[in-house]
Length: 190
Image (cartoon, rainbow, N blue to C red; front, side, top):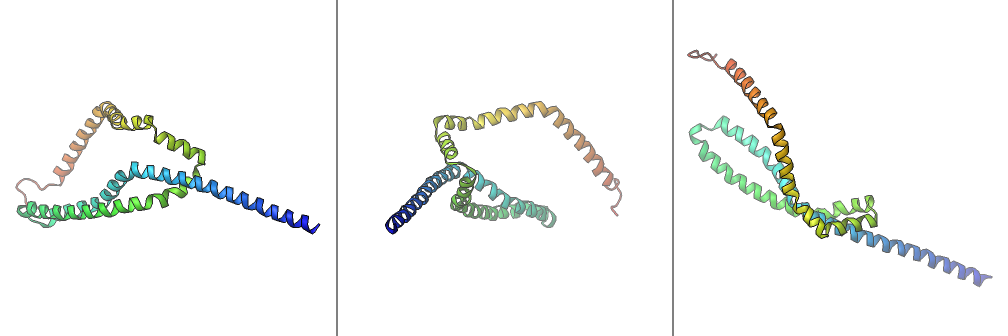
């Protein structure tokens, strides 16, 4: 009886180990798919993400220093000062872009793989990857700029009259506001 009992315990232990190792292999397969999907997304989106994040770092500097330049530098010196600021801004932009690009590449897998593993099944990832690697996906992606331009043109054409009317109304209102705030001709400003 002891022999049967110990064989049963060994069999149970082996079966349990087999279930865990099968689950681990399945998770390894799913993880490999998640990594592949993250790499595909990195390749597709990293440039745009780096550009957008770089612009968000540069824009506040441009806005702040343009205003400060206009307020503090005499008009005769503004072009020279602006050229020097542009050179410094280019250095900052280039360095920032390199730093951001490196981090975008470095952080794609750690950020995306856990999300893909949690939110997508293995079959869903296989389907997505198969589509993204297919010729039809490449063809669809290549239509993006043409399709977006056609769509934007239609929106612009459909809204041109309304937007231009709004611009004219704004110009009229701005003209009234500025003229009512300006000192009278020949009068001294108080």
